[in-house]
Length: 278
Image (tube, rainbow, N blue to C red; front, side, top):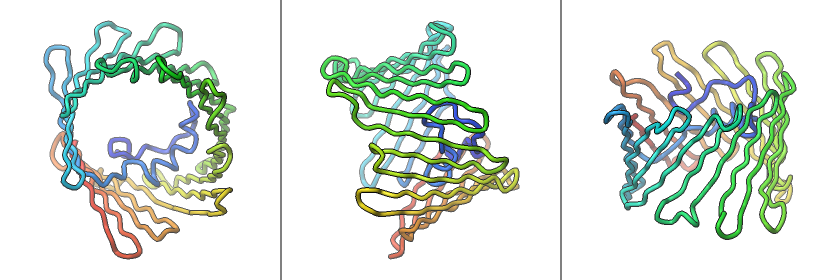
């Protein structure tokens, strides 16, 4: 399916601010990665699920091992260890308040600098997120809200520090049958994004986006099509005004093993290739 290959199915309603225009982003850039990756999962040791990831970029290799477990019915925990010996731990807690999920994460050996508390609340037509970092030094909060108005959603987000409001954005999207239109004003309103997502049929979706940088006076455009094939595999092609062509092909190569191949070619015929096996 599209969702299992880095291309999310078209969204009909944004629940959180980051979901606005996400269907456009998923087709034009989601899952397009030019490193080589292998992920192995499906192993269990009692109630602990284990996963290993290996990635290469050029001659550099890195890997991680992850363990997931639930110490309580409303707590999901995860511990990740990198090949450099860095340990990251997180716990997601639900049930504190109806619709609220709180995730606490940190590197135990450097907790003062890496501690993060992320909250997301979905209540009725409102989706709110609030993340707090740098708690021990200069606290920073990233907050957003999305309001569902039926076929339309509007939202705003901002980064807040002890110096006041930093970066901020506002966004909106409107669904008209098979067409979803979106607009985002980001980077303190210096970046204007206008997007469109159109469902051609049950298996094919097209997307387009124009990005205008106000201060630089520059505009870029990209468009793409994603399709689920009769074989069950998924394919995508994206082209930009910078004359860069990108494509991906994903599917199950053997039972239980998903693979994705990505290709990028520019106007100078320089190319990048990426592969992932999960």
